[in-house]
Length: 151
Image (cartoon, rainbow, N blue to C red; front, side, top):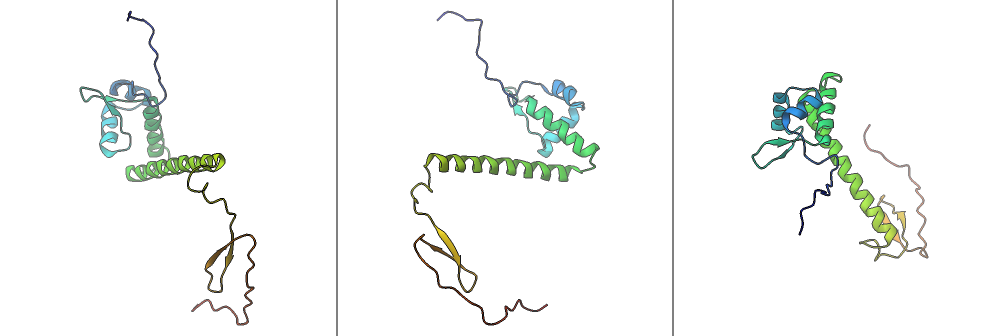
């Protein structure tokens, strides 16, 4: 196979390409700050073969966001860590919702086997009753006032 000077690179914003000094400069921080954020788990770069940190464009943007929260919003590092965890959780949940919506639209997955349309009703104790479309329910009429408990 002959040597080709053209290579196909699949780079995106999560491709680790920056060494710590370049990432620090791009984020406007000292490299020691990046090391501290790595130890705290705020920004976790990839590791090169020699264990050197490699930052992606996404990591640099995250560093800037951490800096913004810390310096301009006054959030401490523990608060920043929690904010980032919650944002990550929301992102994961959005991906899962999109997967489930795609399954429903394609007619696959656990919901595809349940082609029966369901109607739900509330029972006398507030419990939920699943019924088929053709079923009728007994109408519950409360003759006594509803007691909500001590006030």
